[in-house]
Amino acid sequence: MRQLAAVLLLCFFTLPLLAQEETLIDGEIENGGFGGPVVKFGSINGEAGIFVGGRGGWIINHTFIVGGGGYGLANDVKANVTGPYGQRYLNFGYGGVELEYIAQSDRLIHFSVMTLIGGGAVGWRDDSVRSGMDAGNDTFFVVEPAAQVNLNVTKYFRLSAGVSYRYISGVSSSAATNADLSGPLAVLTFRFGKF
Image (cartoon, helix red, strand yellow):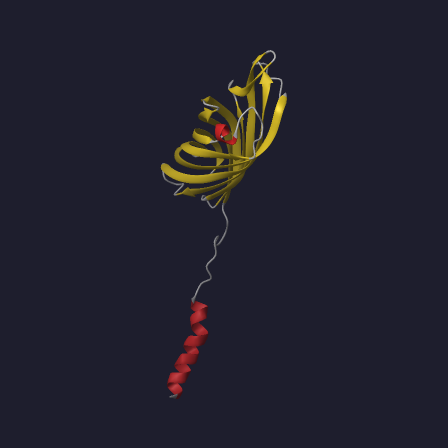
């Protein structure tokens, strides 16, 4: 009986020593970072829209990215209102924090999923004169989840192509509605950095 009690006490005190604590990030953290231009294509106000911008971020253990990005409408898209001098065109931009998970980043071709959470502004300008947000200025909340395929071109350059869906909420401008500004996008990203 004493031997059984001794074995049980030994197990009780030594088994926890054998167990290893589990954490989200274990051991030393490997750091990297990147930045680069982004081009997005999608429908806005029922027309083709081209968005240009950039994004960058801190890469943690080749797997997680915490960063940010900003994007603006680069071509003329008609607003839902007309002015005294003719057609009005949208001014539209947004940005925010971006969180990304990368699967098997050491593979030549690999996948990632990300989400942008932020805000933006929409307004209009008369004709095609890019004079800033002339009228109808309105701010909004945006969430944009995305899925991407990534190609390791060189050690310091990666090309990403994917799709996203922009959800807009809070627009009350007459230039466009939440539904006019929301929708799917094709995304092309050029990443330069230490991965």
